Length: 39
Image (cartoon, rainbow, N blue to C red; front, side, top):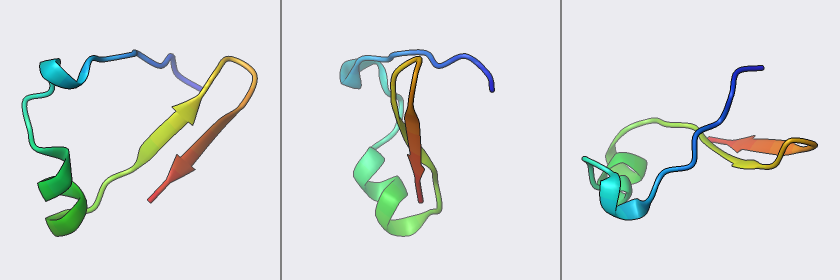
């Protein structure tokens, strides 16, 4: 598995709500021991 990079919401260059409602994407949350990817 690749490395995860934490980003601040203010650094995002897109509207995550538009992407979730109009496009397909994966969201991944977790830590070094466990993670969960959601569509």
